[in-house]
Length: 323
Image 1 (tube, one colour):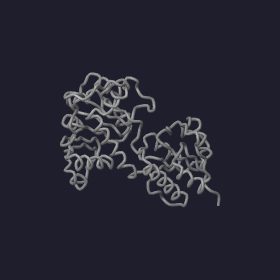
Image 2 (spheres, one colour):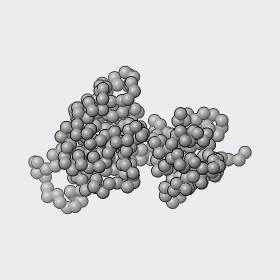
Image 3 (cartoon, one colour):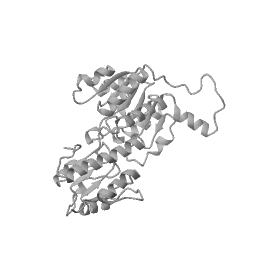
Image 4 (spheres, helix red, strand yellow):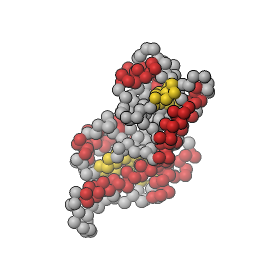
């Protein structure tokens, strides 16, 4: 039986690429450069499966190609806002993702950003590297305490829940949240999380606000200038979800004018291009989309993609099909 022809759009962990090469007719991206729109369109005509990542903008325009050979897109990641799901489905293409696996690691990064922003970690590192530190003194680089403070979560999915658990049991933080749909009581009880009736209520109340909602068109610039003005002066804003949820220009204005204490960002609008004005600010911590970047998690993500496409090509419904 002929093996399915697979395109892996970026370089994946070595152990995962070995499995893909052994079990499928796989084309790998050894140079690890993002594919062009033309290359993605061509791939739809030549491969049975495309194993995509967040760097592959599979838009409506990309799916307007003929003939289409691809039957499944196995996305390497939980977020899929870079894929026009409806256009894929209109072309009879199944789309899967990798939920659950990266939950803890992304929650870890969220906690890291909370701590770095609160304790001015990036600013301190820069001070030493630039040889501008002249020794300890009592009023140097005073930040905010994390333990016992209030953490507000925008969205209460798996990653937000894991973050709440780490924050509550690790730092005795009070948890409040806003979610667009009802959250079962059993998910909030362990951390005594309190549901707020609006995003604004979370922003006005919390000492640390962490964003965990999808990067959907409905959430584009969900955190805008008016909402940034709701944060109190010692608050910190954290984003490990998608960059488009925050209006970057409004955030730069807010941080430049010290509307609140600081921000921690692992994701950006139009990444990897980052607004140069962000780079000059001391009160923001910037990470290069490290949410799931551990060996264990990336390997597990690859195995989950393989599981999904194996199920598909054996005539089963993949466990992580996006409907």
